[in-house]
Length: 37
Image (cartoon, rainbow, N blue to C red; front, side):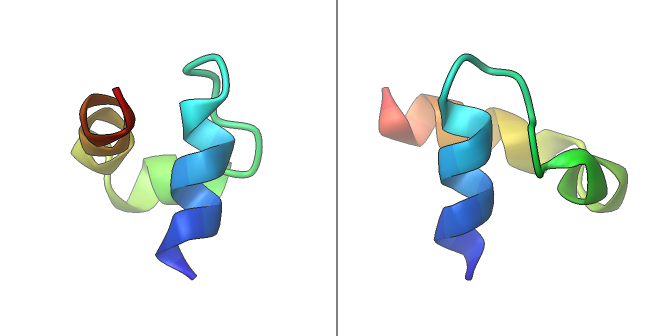
């Protein structure tokens, strides 16, 4: 399930469905970008 959040944030760095994830874990959307890169 976490992959969906990563993919959404990993597109252009803009959280589409990550809005909920952003509130829960702000640094979580930063980690995926580094991992995907």
